[in-house]
Length: 189
Image (cartoon, rainbow, N blue to C red; front, side, top):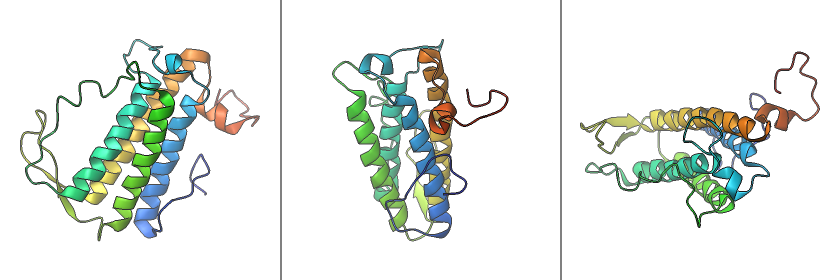
């Protein structure tokens, strides 16, 4: 599809703005998964930069985020609070957890999220957001704002994952998806 870096096909029948948002989100998800290609569980836990982030941890975090966003839209709980205890290991691929399992969960969570977006009556529907220490007052976001927030969050962490992967073994996402494309001046390497 024009406007994407990867070949994406939506799993839900949507048109218009929903299709645009979900297509771009699917593209970012695919780019994130490129950073994990061929990694062992140990490599996916490796901190290759000064940051504590790892590719496995980022995939786990985003899989959980997709689940949380879908549940927030579906449940519309005006008393919801962010679960700080669940956030403790949100960025860590712990012993006993595998990259493969979290990639599978990411795919399942993404498909569920896409179904939720396809089923909402309008992207203008207002959804109560969980309160949190950084957001103590209840806010109401449109489904559109929530979807765009998830798109931004995914793209943000794609950049992290790309840098982590480059530091691990030199693979860059753009080079991995473009194969032998001649970038002329080293872009994509």
